[in-house]
Every structure is written in C-alpha cells, then in structure tokens.
Length: 275
Image (cartoon, rainbow, N blue to C red; front, side):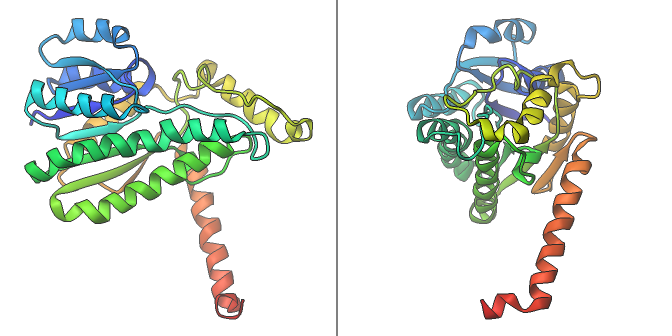
C-alpha cells in the first residue's frame, strides 16, 4: 500500500537513505532539508513521487509550510519521520546556556513543533504515524554528550506522551533507537566554546570514537535504517520503541538491567517509603 511520508533531515545520512528507499518503493515523499538544492539528485531519480521542500525545524512558519506542501502535493500525510538532529559535544559543565538551548531547539522543539503542525491533518484523517528518531543515547548516557543525551531523553518522553494523548484518535507513535551509523553525525558534531581540562580523561575517548564513526567497518550502513523504517511503515500495530542496528543490544540491555536491578533494590530496602 502506497504511503505518504514527510521526512526531515534528508540532505544526507539516515534521512537521505530513507527518502531514496521510499522513492524506489513507489511511496510518496516530501523530503526536507535546510538547503533543498541538496535534494536535486533525489528528485531527479524519482520525479513522480519525491518532492523537495526547504525546512529548518527551528522555524515554526517553515514547519507549517512543509505540512501544507505535503497536503497540497499528496492530499495528506500518513507517516512523519522526525529525523533532523545534531550532536552537541561537551560535558555537563562545559555546555553553555546558548549551546544547550540550540541543541534542544533542533532536537526537541523541532520535532515537537512539526508534529504539532501535522496533528490537525491526522485528526481529520483519523490516522497517522509519528516516528521519532531518538538514539541509544535516549536510554544510555555517554560521557561528553550530556546535552545530546538530555535531548534524546526529552524526545522519548514527549513521544510517549503523544502516544497516550493521540492514540485514541488513530495516531500511532514509534521511537527509534539507532546504534552507530555511518552518517554525517561526526562531521556535524558541535564542540563547546569552552573546554575544561579536567574532563579530557573522561570524554576524549568518546570524542575519538565519534569522529571515527564514518571510517569504521563495523558501523551500520544507512540503508539498514531505511529498510527497517520502510517495514515499520507497513505495520498495522507498530511498536512504541524499536532499536535499530545489531549493536543496540550491547548498549540497551545493560541499561535496562541496571535500572531494573536498582529499582528492585530500592523497593526491597523500603527506601521509597522512608526517605
């Protein structure tokens, strides 16, 4: 069944791979990027079913215009993929107010404002599927990625709330938790304006790992992500959370186990009733 998709962050990486896969499948796609000319090749390959739209998710007017363009082009939106994001490097102490605000404006407020713009369309249709691209960092804290991790935790909380609120109206919600993928993430990583030398022993290894992501043979290809999301879009009852990539279990399972163990210890000790 042909689906109508609206995808953010399609100039490269995961968004680009997904838009290409959907175009090849014959689905209808509004592919967005801050520089829509970066999508010219994609549109040329699939001129009948891929439309390029300029979108900076930090701009409420552009968010509204992208939804209007999707409705004008294809009559509605079946699946929204909130993919656009970037990584702010730096420990908790190093990240400034301005850097933290910028991280949340793109990674949290952007998906929120775009989904909010789509929801009236979905309420009228009585169906829709919101896909939020989180990360294993939405569950696992990594040193040197305090702001990014906080933004992904926030995205997952927002998405869960949306699932509860809009589910009765026919809106499905899925949180994707990708592992490592060979994308432009490392090239777009933003460094904090001020570094604190004491933290280099904690986060330098993490920084080296991030900067080397595109050159490691074991890193997942974006086409794997595209295949998973395309299949997800075909499901009548998609999961609320979906890890993406064979490396995710190594990150997520210990995190789930640790939370469960800590919870059990607190309950057993009775601290929840005496503190």
